Length: 312
Image 1 (cartoon, one colour):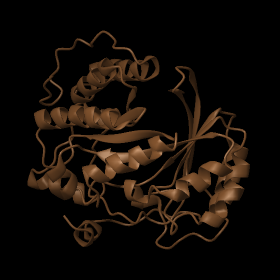
Image 2 (image 1 turned 90 degrees about the vertical axis):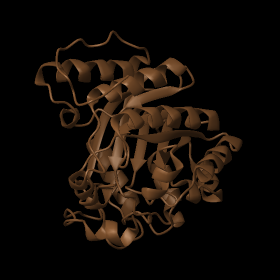
Image 3 (image 1 turned 45 degrees about the horizontal axis):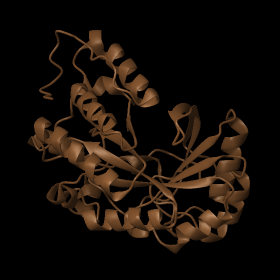
């Protein structure tokens, strides 16, 4: 699957304002120190990511060209004026923070001054864009810097098909570079990307957790793969993709927490997409949220339903 084909399957972008983030939120998260505290997230309006991944739908809220100098800091300033106070901040820009075509390095100082009251700040980066720019941004900050990196899957052939334009070695090198510089990292891991059965999706999500922690990340987020970006919908029709079951997400989260090697979170956004049972959905969602915060395994939900074809 190449970039041209992926782009050709898309619909229209949403209308966005380069001087406003397209969304923001504040939610609870368990920190590296084991505290449950408020985490603010600003979803910055930015140029589309330079890497065209098969499963990505973040392009829907991006611009086709780089936003003007000062736009990102203006978005952050506006969002902070609207949001309740929080100790921690995620700056997610639908791509890589250290991509010069997305966020110019000359904007770093203003951004750093706006967020100096936070304890930590988390940004996203493609492993091939983790370099000295990370250090220059880090050196301007009062908060501790953490970098979120998309591993996606430890399955090398599927990773290639995702058009991520990276290898497992690239991921390891990026995380090791951060580790050498005393910069924390977290990994995004996909649950059942295309070209996998449900059983394979569970297996490879577990192996991805193993690889991420062995490489040196502090935290992993498991993201069940969704349709809706055009390409994924076509793969669903062809039988090359099926949404994972909520029980599979529970299975992988249980496994990740049992490792005791770092925090493991389940992405709980719109979980109704992954369940066929309205009776147990709320209970399963509540359990996943509690496990995210407590980082402990909870009693499993018992229900007579068969949510897809998940296996343990």
